[in-house]
Amino acid sequence: MAGAISIVAPERLTKQPGESRVYAVDFSKYGEIEDNAETLTGTPTVAVTPTGELTVGSPNISGNRVRFRVSGGTLAAGEVKEYRFKVTVATSGSNTLVGDGYLFLVD
Image (tube, rainbow, N blue to C red; front, top):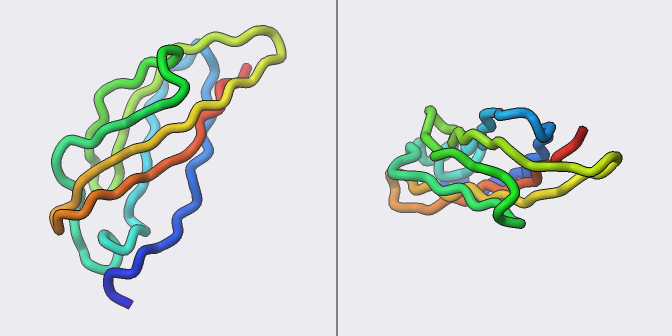
Protein backbone atom coordinates (compact mmCIF):
# COMPACT_ATOMS: atom_id res chain seq x y z
CA MET A 1 0.00 0.00 0.00
CA ALA A 2 1.64 3.25 -1.14
CA GLY A 3 2.02 5.88 1.56
CA ALA A 4 1.36 3.43 4.40
CA ILE A 5 2.95 4.30 7.72
CA SER A 6 5.35 1.58 8.81
CA ILE A 7 5.66 0.72 12.47
CA VAL A 8 9.26 1.23 13.50
CA ALA A 9 10.35 0.14 16.97
CA PRO A 10 12.01 2.82 19.11
CA GLU A 11 15.80 2.78 19.04
CA ARG A 12 17.66 1.61 22.19
CA LEU A 13 21.13 3.11 22.46
CA THR A 14 23.82 3.00 25.16
CA LYS A 15 26.90 5.05 26.05
CA GLN A 16 29.34 5.43 28.92
CA PRO A 17 29.88 8.80 30.65
CA GLY A 18 33.36 9.31 29.16
CA GLU A 19 32.32 8.54 25.60
CA SER A 20 31.57 10.94 22.79
CA ARG A 21 29.68 8.92 20.18
CA VAL A 22 27.83 9.45 16.92
CA TYR A 23 24.40 7.84 16.68
CA ALA A 24 22.05 7.57 13.72
CA VAL A 25 18.31 7.14 13.41
CA ASP A 26 17.37 5.30 10.22
CA PHE A 27 14.21 6.49 8.48
CA SER A 28 14.46 4.11 5.48
CA LYS A 29 11.57 1.90 6.67
CA TYR A 30 9.13 4.79 7.08
CA GLY A 31 6.41 4.65 4.43
CA GLU A 32 7.24 8.09 3.06
CA ILE A 33 10.81 6.99 2.33
CA GLU A 34 10.33 3.29 1.46
CA ASP A 35 7.07 3.49 -0.52
CA ASN A 36 7.09 7.02 -1.92
CA ALA A 37 10.86 7.43 -2.47
CA GLU A 38 10.89 10.75 -0.63
CA THR A 39 14.22 12.05 0.69
CA LEU A 40 15.12 13.67 4.00
CA THR A 41 15.60 17.43 3.71
CA GLY A 42 16.20 20.56 5.74
CA THR A 43 17.73 20.84 9.17
CA PRO A 44 16.80 17.99 11.52
CA THR A 45 16.43 18.51 15.26
CA VAL A 46 17.19 16.27 18.24
CA ALA A 47 15.51 16.70 21.62
CA VAL A 48 16.72 14.75 24.67
CA THR A 49 14.88 14.54 28.01
CA PRO A 50 15.73 15.03 30.75
CA THR A 51 17.67 18.07 29.57
CA GLY A 52 20.95 19.51 30.82
CA GLU A 53 22.98 16.37 31.46
CA LEU A 54 24.06 15.29 27.96
CA THR A 55 25.54 17.39 25.17
CA VAL A 56 23.97 16.78 21.75
CA GLY A 57 25.81 18.02 18.68
CA SER A 58 24.19 19.43 15.54
CA PRO A 59 22.33 16.68 13.67
CA ASN A 60 22.89 16.11 9.96
CA ILE A 61 21.30 14.07 7.21
CA SER A 62 23.24 11.17 5.72
CA GLY A 63 21.11 9.36 3.12
CA ASN A 64 18.02 8.05 4.94
CA ARG A 65 19.57 8.58 8.36
CA VAL A 66 19.93 11.49 10.76
CA ARG A 67 23.28 11.43 12.56
CA PHE A 68 24.08 13.24 15.82
CA ARG A 69 26.88 13.20 18.43
CA VAL A 70 26.18 12.69 22.15
CA SER A 71 28.71 13.31 24.91
CA GLY A 72 28.77 13.92 28.65
CA GLY A 73 26.75 12.55 31.51
CA THR A 74 27.73 11.38 34.99
CA LEU A 75 26.84 8.30 37.01
CA ALA A 76 27.15 7.21 40.61
CA ALA A 77 28.50 3.68 41.22
CA GLY A 78 26.03 1.07 39.95
CA GLU A 79 23.66 3.67 38.54
CA VAL A 80 22.02 3.59 35.08
CA LYS A 81 20.30 6.66 33.64
CA GLU A 82 17.64 6.62 30.95
CA TYR A 83 17.09 9.42 28.43
CA ARG A 84 14.38 9.78 25.79
CA PHE A 85 15.33 11.27 22.44
CA LYS A 86 13.24 12.46 19.51
CA VAL A 87 14.67 13.19 16.07
CA THR A 88 12.49 15.33 13.80
CA VAL A 89 13.17 15.76 10.09
CA ALA A 90 11.29 16.97 6.99
CA THR A 91 10.94 15.07 3.70
CA SER A 92 10.92 16.17 0.07
CA GLY A 93 7.16 15.43 0.05
CA SER A 94 6.52 18.05 2.77
CA ASN A 95 6.03 15.42 5.48
CA THR A 96 7.53 15.62 8.96
CA LEU A 97 8.94 12.41 10.43
CA VAL A 98 9.80 11.74 14.07
CA GLY A 99 12.12 8.92 15.11
CA ASP A 100 12.41 8.27 18.81
CA GLY A 101 14.09 6.02 21.28
CA TYR A 102 16.01 5.66 24.50
CA LEU A 103 19.63 6.23 25.38
CA PHE A 104 20.93 4.46 28.47
CA LEU A 105 23.96 5.90 30.24
CA VAL A 106 25.78 2.90 31.71
CA ASP A 107 29.18 2.16 33.22
